Length: 184
Ligand SMILES: O=C(O)CCC(=O)C(=O)O
Ligand SMILES: [Fe+2]
Image (cartoon, rainbow, N blue to C red; front, side, top):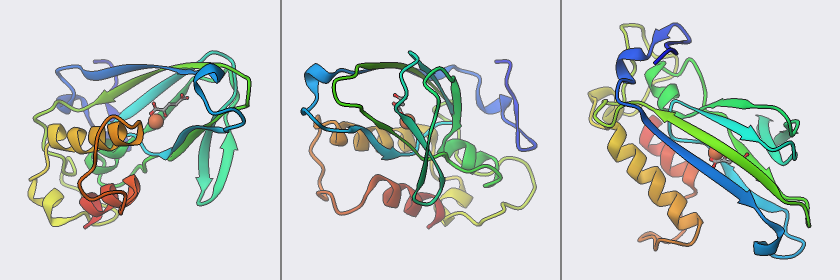
């Protein structure tokens, strides 16, 4: 794979098996509650990075500082970092929080390519340098692999989309759960 250096860390050795997913999103007014502006709630992606290709229709927003959302132009192609990049880089990059708002009556299509490390990679900072912010003991021991992390994040998604029941109801938001796992 041609990409490799992120914040001074060479990620190529952790990305050898094309652990990628491709998602086509159709924000279709026919299947939304009339008047609803919620397309996709605020979240962070699990992988190393996600490339978002849009059809020209605005809707994607990035959280620039806590609580301040910036609308991305509809014709921009965006690369967003996710949690695996945070961990592997020793917290030298952060996970970009984003959401999608609908304009009632307007259809929007997007295609997202999620790129993540190999499933058997242990999620801990690569290289010898000290993490900028310390991680949970689970992370520092190398006890969390990409497959497990992906599963937890995927379960959250299926719950949000209404396809899966959750044991502990809705007590923790996606971000709380992930932050606990990562930072301890
Ligand atoms: O539709 C978009 O622009 C973004 C979708 C997204 O964030 C996701 O599927 O994780
Ligand atoms: Fe996303």
